[in-house]
Amino acid sequence: MENILNTLKMFGFTEYESKVYITLLKTGKSSGYEISKNSSVPRSKVYNILEILIKKGCIVHTKNTNPIYYDAIPINELIKNLEYKYNKALENISYELNEYNRKVDMDNMWHIEGYENTFNKCRNMIQNTKNELYLQIWEEDYKEIKEDLEKFESSGKKLLLIFYSKNHNYKLNIKNYYPHGFEDEKEKEFGGRWINIVSDSNQVIFGHIKNTKNAEVIWTESNSLIFLAKEYIKHDAYTLKIIEKFGKVLEEEYHYSDKDFRNIFEKLEIK
Image (cartoon, rainbow, N blue to C red):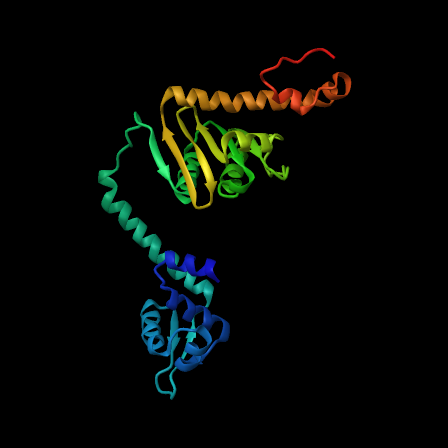
């Protein structure tokens, strides 16, 4: 219930308005008294809420009955109404503000705060990539850009993905990705998850993700940072490709373990 209440709040519904509408969806035709009882909205407030929902077009009501009855419009009708309303509003914003549209000064390193804001920017970057995309991402965050990545790869553009999963859930619906395999070590090394995206060697988003409420990344066109971020991803791909192809041979014939590969301060000795 909390999830849908928060979602409806994004479309201008108060908690009480959402509860009343959801109650009517569940119960159908009801009086104000019944709605108050079933929705836990105080009776002193429920009639005002019902009037607001009538004006919003979310519910219908009788007139020449005692008591007056109310019912919710079907959910698919509500969704179409909201789509129409917000699409018209977005068209108006675009028309009115387009004359002020300009490119962000990318000589700086811009900080983006918040999980939702971070992945809004990531989706925008993916959708505007013309040729190739380099990416490191964790399983917990992959769902935020899953559809965009699948669409990107299916369009024939080049995608290189390094995928991290603590539970080793490596099954993805894209072709060119490398399971990392050393997630525990990397998480300890970095102190948590991160995101790294390089678009067309022109832009990079890189930063730390603690959880779905706490994330901060930088967004820049700095050539130096783009080079480092891209090489980091490519280096991972080279290494993982070798381990994928020859890892078992090295382990079985030369008795090298994952720990031997990860210890960068000691060279591998022939055993």
